[in-house]
Image 1 (cartoon, rainbow, N blue to C red):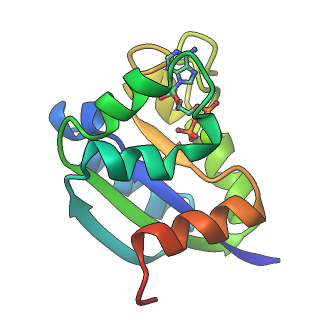
Image 2 (cartoon, rainbow, N blue to C red):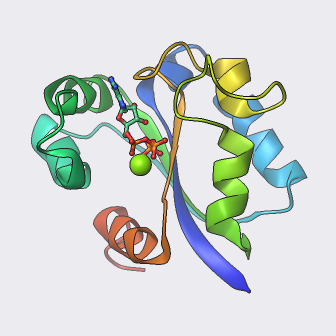
Length: 135
Ligand code: ATP
Ligand code: MG
């Protein structure tokens, strides 16, 4: 079933100039990029985005990280896009991610892991609305 997911190239991957290679992989995987923008979110916006993690020990540090520099947010469209994109990213911790996944190639550690993907249809709807209010 055609589906939409929110993908983010995180500040670490933008900083290390991996964005082009990540977008190339997205296209090679057959996704349609139906929206894309670069922005630098505030700490408060990062807290709103990661609100589901507000009670986790890493909440403060991950929201500092996500607001530390420019990010690229995209709506990806395709067959089972949510799971497809999560497979291409690989496991949250790059040390556990399979060779060939983007986090294996471009992630540094469990926090500085290069990119984000929605994890379910409900979170995809929330996250797309969070960054693309007009769409
Ligand atoms: P994302 O939601 O960014 O796609 P994910 O779904 O694989 O990643 P989550 O459990 O939702 O992982 O965690 C959200 C983000 O918080 C992670 O991608 C990572 O940047 C950071 N994070 C997760 N676990 C830890 C941890 N133990 N220590 C530090 N940062 C963490
Ligand atoms: Mg997640």
